[in-house]
Length: 92
Ligand code: 9UX
Image (cartoon, rainbow, N blue to C red; front, top):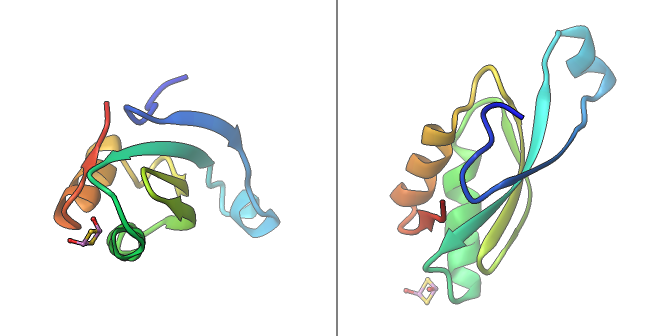
């Protein structure tokens, strides 16, 4: 599959009916994240990822995050940058 975020695994395409109407292709990806060791880290990563438009954060655990995003709007670089700005790094 194209545009696979590094360290991530594309699980499935999951569009809500309104997203389908808008012609969006929402991708679900599991990201592996380095440097997270506590629950504050989880909050930081959540907030960092939530800044990206056209993306929703489904779940964040220590060391991983599940995000759903419009593949036309969010790139792997965007994900890596958001995670880095929060103080962590996306594992390739
Ligand atoms: Mo979690 Mo605190 O890694 O620096 S321990 S936020």
